[in-house]
Image (cartoon, rainbow, N blue to C red):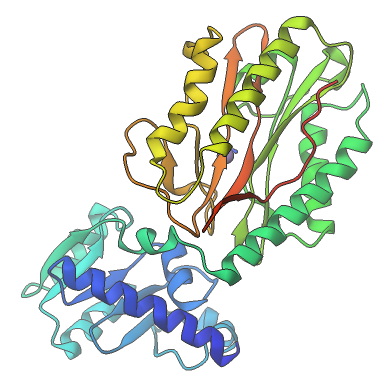
Length: 363
Ligand code: GLY
Ligand code: MN
């Protein structure tokens, strides 16, 4: 890893130190795998990062020795020997550090591990802290945005191939499998989540699991997919017409598209997340389908496919430059079908940039 990358991760850890201080702690044990990765560049698992006021140490194990040298040269390491618990490494490091107030990630550490840690660190105050690293992750830097663009590229190229090859005998499961194969062919490491493929009335399941239903059994199919590339993800949804579509599904499609475009138009720095959600929700409600849009408008994407921030009525915070969010309104009618249209949008200084570009025609 070039030195510039080391500086990038060091800068993130320094920002975290300020948040730890604000949380009245003098160090933090980072246990969430994505947060460890965000702060170090390490992409392996089963490793914790201890960040104290003047140093940091990655607690890992010998399976990762070579990978750690490649991914985070210069980072202090404590590699536990086989049979030793990672908490023993934590105990050793904390006792040597002079830390007395240790923050831990309360949304990641299990109750069992927290209790074991308390047993090992009897004289140390353990301070539950939630969302400190996640807060930093909300704002993407240029390299992260480039990685998201790459994840979008893989997803969109894969979709173009799958779309061109759609035929009536294909099942939802086969479409899902083809998407995965194509994403990998275009350089993606994997899909960013198990894809949702729903033909006809199965499109009413917002998180439907692909089945043996065939494309030819109805006139439309919903596909929700994304790619993982360079550690970052994309997340898109399109509904394709595969036969003669009814006026009802066309009307629903047009309402969802209008709602999505209205919400996207509202995205700019300072806009409240709840207001962006409301823009889409009002459009759908005024068309009489308010009760059929049963989820938030969207979510942040980055290292994870669902991360902060969120678009829903309780999020009164403003959008900030560098956030990357999905905008995905939907209308779902059991027994008939559903429509969701989802794009990935970057908040920019002057408003927004829609990063995804798959056409939204439906005929
Ligand atoms: N694309 C799936 C979801 O956002 O839940
Ligand atoms: Mn999504």
